[in-house]
Amino acid sequence: MQVEFRNEERLAIIQPPPTLNAAVIDQIREDWFFWLQNTKAVRNVILDMRQVAFMDSSGLGLLVAFLRRVVTRGGDLKIVGLQPGVRVVFEITRAYKIFEIFDTVDEAAQSIS
Amino acid sequence: MKAVIHCGGRPALATMLGEDAWPLLPVGNRPLLEYWFELCAGLGIQEVRLVLGNGAEFIEAYAGNGERWGLRLSYSFLKDEYHPDCFLQRDPEQWRDGLLYVRRPSFPRRLDDRQAWKDFATPAHAASDANGLICRFRAGPVSAADAGRAAADDRPFEELGLSIVPLDDVATYYDLNMKLVAGEITRYIQPGYLARDGSCIGYNVVLPPSAQLLPPLLIGNDSRIGPLAAVGPCVVLGSHVVADRQCTLDHCVVLDGTYIGAGVEVRGKIAAGARLLDPQTGAQVDIVDPWLMARLGRGAQVSDLGRALAEWPLAVLLVLVQALPFLLLYPLLRACGGHFHHRPVHGRRGRRFDFPEWQPPAAAGGGMNFLFLLLGLDCLPRFLMAAIGRVWLCGHSPLSAPGENKLLTELVHYHPGALSEADVRSATPQSGLREIEARYYARIHSIAGDMGLLLRFFGRRMIGAVTSAEDLHG
Image (cartoon, rainbow over all chains, first blue to last red; front, top):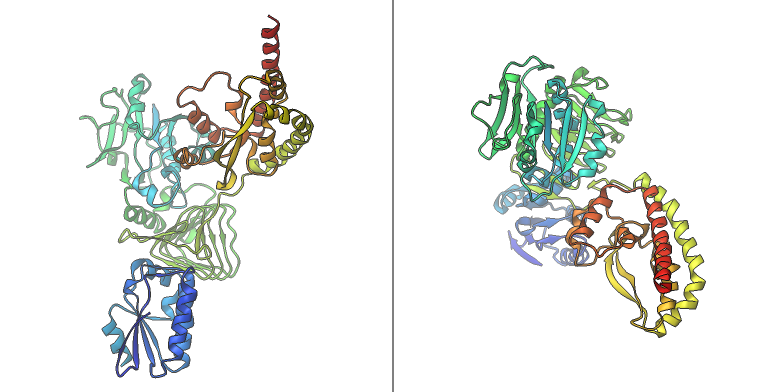
């Protein structure tokens, strides 16, 4: 799990693995939720999806569950750099209405601050 | 005057849009081929020959004998590796009274509402692009040399009030559909379709009251829209489309046999089965979750159900009848060296298994082997395979795995059978005969044909036995 911190560790930028599908999603869910539970300082999270080339509905399910966890503790989740194939999944499932999607990490960070 | 439409090959557009042959791609809410048939009828051409290749059986099933359009359809087959013009050059005499020749995916776009061209004065028309001739119409003789190319005296199609639109990419295809849904469809509309308020809806379309239809839109036949779905504006749905509940379709083209899942939203795209294409960029994405988007299976055909009902009990009966003599003779033949060789093959539903083939004993046991073959006991393990559902009773000679994988992918229907034409053939097969039989059976098969094959099999065994016995006495 690749995480970068900003704003005195109140903002975390996570880089998910290149594939988010049913085969790997359980492990990722476990890692992310464990990490979230053990990093009390982090309020907001940016998912830098530039490396994610493939995502199916199970990956989307993970993002929705992760969003709920982050929002429950008073933070927000932003998504950055969707590849065309992944963007289509967001479009047809209307997930773009739930998530705020940005082109760059800086734009997303600016929207939080 | 005659028309020739080359329906084979796998043009780039058809490859991008899935598995359908290009003449069956929906334009508006009807297959592209239908527009050409209507044009032929309008031009007074009655004899239309379809040169088939990929997807031949679906085109045949759709077009039939052409009676619906007042045409006389005939079919020819041309292998994909041959150039379409080969067909015309074979017998140029046929085209001495004129020819309408459609070589590539293209659409005869009407520039106005003119419906009949019987009084056309110009003798020849051709439309070309950088890649050569797309479509040609010539009222005079066509020589072998210039069958596939535009001649100097060809005239543009615009004089007939037509513009031939080559369909080479998804952007052109999408634009054409959007033009039709925006109002041009009325130039082609047929009785039975409703064109009021810009909505044209085909036959047998299920629309619940809660579904929201926003014209203009075109919906083909046999489609189903789910409750609370919002369809339109500027939507073209092909035939056999299922748009599930609460989905939203907007400025999109949905190809035949596509399932759009519950709550899914498609805007400004082409949905072809599980594939989503962006007409602007040409990008395509395959959706892996079948509950979001999927290609509806062609499903088991009625003939397959009939085949299962007719042939499975017969397979079980044959196993029961042959079991006792098999148990008596096989151990003896086995002791003499007879055995079953197992060939890995492709079975039903893509499963692989070992297909048993009888290897007679080398020298001893000739009489027993003779009786074994006479009773068809060498086929008992195959009948057993049919009884447990690994193969049909009659069908294709099972294709070897992996040796015949390429042929398998080329057959749209594959019905591996315990018995096949190979079992009733007397001579050693010529090169390529096996492939020809496989392709033939993929297109033309019936329960009656299968029963005939079964009778011929046992008949041949009997005749073979009598002949062998006469040889022995002689």
